[in-house]
Image 1 (cartoon, rainbow, N blue to C red):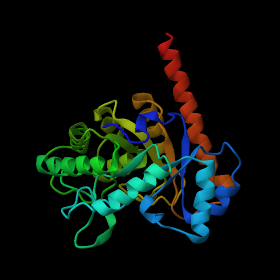
Image 2: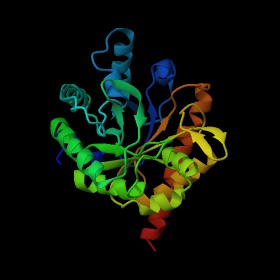
Image 3: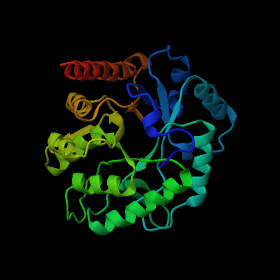
Image 4: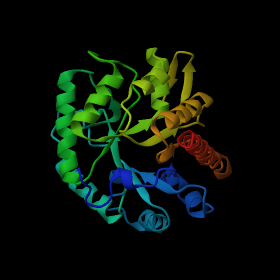
Length: 289
């Protein structure tokens, strides 16, 4: 699909982003140049926002590109797509020249919003249903979407594994993948599979961006995806492996609460940048023999 503004593949590859949270606005406005390259936000949280927050968004958007990560489309749901919301989101994306818009491969509504990202059955019927909704969303948005793999704690009917399901959705909807590395790790521990084997099973060429975040260790065999802690060593290692397999792409650090001092928070984007530089260097060495 041809984007009306920019395509996911037109964005710089080796770049680092932070999730724009309102509690972080003062620190983000005072951040030194080079700490991060772009900001990612949920567009539905910023539509028609005025006042102090609207002015702050305008200032930040003047300094940094905005990427958008949606929360409300419920691509796996059975209620009709909210085409009015999609039209509003398109206006936001076009107005800010957003290079990448992503949503979750899950559902979050029934008769109303459920305020959680719920897993879908991994079945051929679900693939057909979700693909049709993604294609319609992309038609309204006028651009290719990225779809994010989600963390899940219950596993409804699974006629195939998650990687096979995800590959089929990406291929048949002709969309790209926002690969959340923390979600891969959390699911692998909670459901007993090898996270590296999961990455190996994903078809190359569809990854457009990455997310990393922290999680809560409830038990050795139960991890909770909270976005409220520092990124764990196991997730950093998995991100480095993903860079080697799929290449370096824009990578966002997600942090939703329990914010540390900005100096401590900024260490994680710097580490992402170090991993990107290391992966790019290794790729160049391989390319030149």
